[in-house]
Amino acid sequence: MKKSYSLILVSVLWSLIPKFSYGQVPTLGATDSFALFTAVGAFTVNGANTIFGDVGTNKGAFTISGSLTLSGTRHVQDTVSSIAATDVSTAYTDLTTLTCDSTLTTPLGNNRVLVPGVVYCITTAATLKGNLILDGQSTAGSIFNINIDGALSTDSSSTVTLINGASFCNVFWQVNGAVNLGVSSVFKGTVISNGAISLLDKAQLYGRALSVAGAISTSNNGVVGCDVSGNPLPIQLIKFTAKSIDEYVRLDWSTATEINNNYFSVQRSVDLITFEEVARVSGAGNSSVILNYSFIDYYPHKTFSYYRLKQTDFDGNFTYSDILKVKDRRIETFSIFPNPIGPLTTILLKEGTTSKNIEGEFRLYNIFGQEIIKTTVSEQVTKVKTNNLISGIYFYKIIIDNEIIQTGKMISN
Image (cartoon, rainbow, N blue to C red; front, top):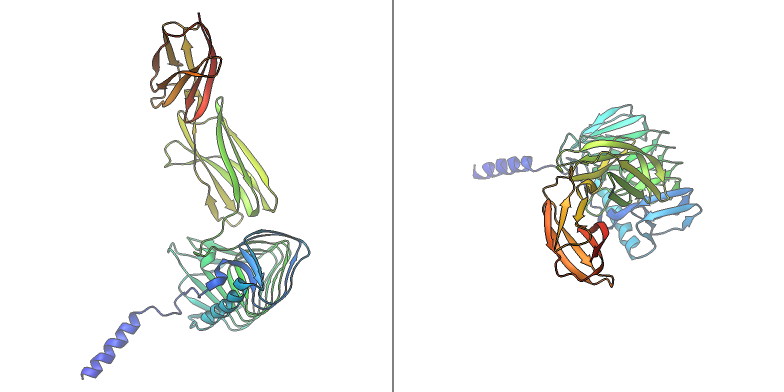
């Protein structure tokens, strides 16, 4: 009887342990930093391509007949590619051992919705037509597994769309055959195939394409991989600045590359809590050259404004930039009198610029550039003793937040 109870207890405990098949991440090892990799096969780059992540082959020629803008490292028959060749086989095996929870029919797409935590299987070669929707169901770290026992082809302009928190770095496709991403298609997830991988003209890949054995070819593509922590690599924003000029704020930003970029939203806030969209600037879609953007905000908030960029893809995915803080120069205009200088100099914040949080400095220099007076400006009216100045010409600066916001000349008789 005791043995019987033990068996029942083990059975109950086993039922409580999540099955490996319930949405699992394969062991990627050294391949996790790669955007495109094959263990055995040629790697051919055609057209103009932009790739975020490592690329390489462990056995085969690496040929660039077009151009490659690479934010990552190229590994060809080196130590890293040797380890990755072993690891890609391990990852492929991990996925093949999953137990199928739901069998799908081909073609995929046509606005079909898949949910995480289910191992989906297709027992034949498959195609993707139209739009396939992966719904993360607002669950952090939701995992998608799709196993295909045959080749995979996507139609021209077909898409994989992620909603409700789904991340392309948590989507895994096991393909027992070749993979062809169609012209101008948008595909998302890590593909681990047992065959060649071809990215046709202007196809976009968000994730990874890894092959156990098969050639890789590109053609005017954009690929955004994942970092070693499983997070998407961002579109490269190389500059974002905001500067107060007279009564407006000028924002400038530049991108080194763009993939599937629909538009930028310029957002402004006064309290760092609520942001409002003040402008929408069209993106370039896909680009592998440095592009410069600018916007002038003619109606910044009094005192301070906070700005950020929201970059939105054509499929609705978006990311935010860092937040910039800008002080309105209208609160930084001062009257300084009398001039010529008397025994007491008054620094007065002009009427209509009534900031209560002034933190700056007044500095006075002689004609040799030597600092004669340095005092804090922290109120609407600041009094400075200037009764000991000798006759001559002087120059002043008012500095706020380490920026010179006002200069001028003063005379002492």
